[in-house]
Image: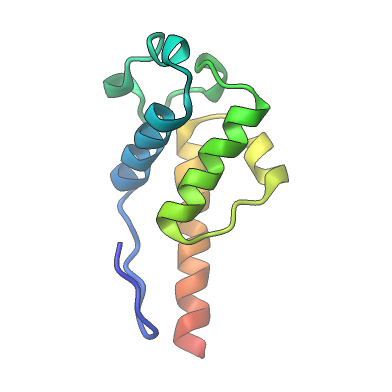
Length: 104
């Protein structure tokens, strides 16, 4: 993803999913990571099928916030049911951000 004052490139859904996989690899404890086939984590993966608790979820969201320079509301984070929900939220926030930058 590239950003400057006049333009923001919206990441493809696959890029956000890849970032989520990277975040899982970074924040999950080794014994939890061993339970996850990262290659099979896709947009349809239910978050409840992953070995994550609320603390890990917030760490995952922080990783995505840092990667894409967006804010993920805590209430929204706890409402996510699938990886697609996260992807859609991040892309929507970036679209909103691009609109604000274009209007500045």
